[in-house]
Image (tube, rainbow, N blue to C red; front, side, top):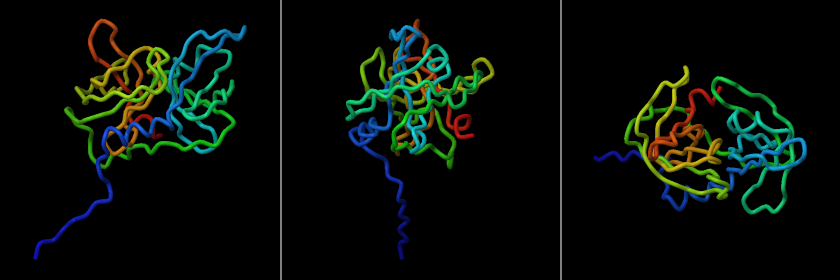
Length: 193
């Protein structure tokens, strides 16, 4: 007899993955005069208001306002819970219950050519969704990075890079302005701890 193996993990369509944007936020950075001096993205990681972003997004401001899709409220915070300078990661907290994204646990190693979706707010274009593939793995300034082709721009920093199951495999961190779609993410292996 044929044995069928069922798995509950099923790849999602781009449309389904795009719906996860409601768990990705836009962060505006403010100086001590209250002026907006920059922006980035963030990923909901805990129901109690915890948001993961890049340290270079969180380190520049006096306070932050956080925008959530489908919610008109501007959430203001100056709470930086923790940060990691080398990995360029930080966690901020807002006063709201959140629906966090699932993080990839690493059952299989990521591979070149694997499809990914990036969600963030490039140049302040709130929760833009783009797709691409993992184009390589690089070690940059002592950090292992995932190189991917999904287009990102300034403001995408701190946004999510998802696999096709809707799990976060990395956080958009950097790109090369001189190149096309040469983007880098800090991977789940460094984020999970």
